[in-house]
Image 1: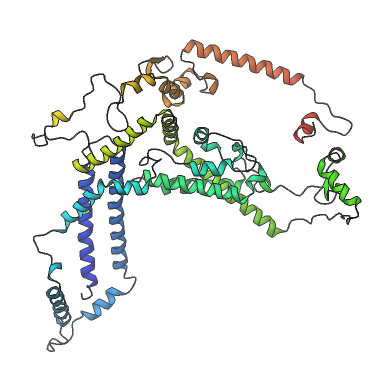
Image 2 (image 1 turned 180 degrees about the vertical axis):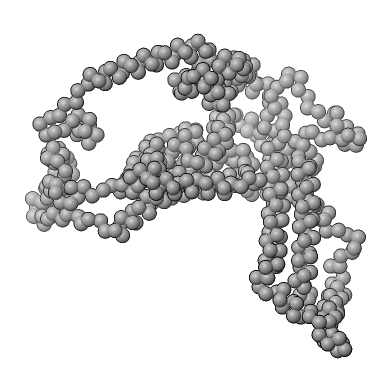
Amino acid sequence: MADTSVYESARMTHEEIEQYEDALVDTLNNPPKSSSHRLHMQWQLATSSLLDQIVSRYQSLSDMYQDVNGDRAHEWDVLARKDDTDPENGPFAEFYERLEHLQAYFRKYPERAISLETSATPSILGTYDASLFDMTSMERDFSGEEMGGRFLDLYVQYEMYINLKGVTRLSYLDYVGQLDNMVGEASNVPAATRRTETYRKYLASLCQYLSTFLHKTRPLEDMDIVESQVLEQFEVQWDQGAVPGWESKEAVLFGTTSDAAEGQGIWCDACQRFYAKQTVYDAHLTSNKHVKAADRMQKGETVAKPKPREQDTELEKTKRAMKAKLIARDEVLVQALAKELSSVRDDTRSNVERKAALTDREREEEAEALDAEMEEAMETGGLGYEEEGEDGAGGGGASEKIYNPLKLPMGWDGKPIPFWMYKLHGLRVEYKCEICSDHVYKGRKVFEKHFQESRHAFGMRALGLPNSIQFRGVTRIQDAFALAEKLKQQKRVETVDEDDTIEVEDEQGNTYDLLKRQGLL
């Protein structure tokens, strides 16, 4: 087919934009009627895809009008008016030449001809209406553990974390719940481990997963802004030395040059290293490492000579600072993304606990329910369990209503949860919280979770009390004030005890706390 004119391409692009905008309006006006999370997620993905198509078309138009490649100027020269008397070089010569090419093309391929009665808009709408509820794309984008974006799948990152040297062993539930504290100074990861390449790979993997998950589950939100704001704030705080846990920048991980490193300490020929104090040197003489090294020296091996380390060059300091900055940046970004996904992390913990309590038969029933949901979504066009028909044409909308005489809560599939599960979670038991204006919570789990929610925090602020962990489980206002008074008294007693404590040094100038931190006690 002959090359299309740049002006015709611009016209076609404008037409495509209008068609995509019409498709976007129809999609937004017809969300899925089902309460299924998967259907709503697929609807958001389709809407985001339409927006991306519109943005890409506008970008193409912008390049055309700016004439980046010079196509418009060339087209203008080709179509410019020439000698009117010359039929071969006249103003319409190029037009008729291209028309002849088009006619020859469609004579050769008649099936590609488009009739005027056929609009391109329905084809676009039909394409996106079909992909709107295409569950196969959801299966490709999310793993089975993520359940279409409802839960996190952090098993790979969890394995990388527990394999780090010197970290505290945690269960998967605790890891997900404390994810925002699993990096940085609060993670209790040794400084030597934080310098390793394994830790940097763990941070990069965790950061990439959380960022990708946010972009996939929130396609209609600009999550790049969240990350850019965090990074901009980090750059400012890093320059000021105000990043929490990184006030001394690279010295947090790589340390500074001490007197011992400069050759001013006590040198041990056997161990080939310096010791800062005499007490530390005397304590290491009984260690197995020193005894073995001393035996090797007695057998005639070469005695090592003190080799004081030279001061770090500016290049080495710059490299260390850059490594520390990259680690700190990833840690800050992981903490911000983990807080953004706090509700998803809570749901993930609940799902892991629920799946651990299921029997094999219940797992099979859950898988069958998922398959039935997908089939019904494809058959009803996403209407799910609430298919409507105002004029009566819909197969009897009244008969499709969910039968729920016991008023059971709705589950993740849009249907009432089983009665045995209703009793298992204790949803029949009501808990009243006086601090939350006598609000009633059904179920122990919901009741315990509400202490971290805004309603309870607002009630505590109204009483002038902190919403700390000591007040967890307190629901009566009188009990809250009594506990606050008791905590104040305990704090006063501890303050008096600290004032009476005297720190004493030994003959070497060491204190008890200092020797305990060095591991000599």
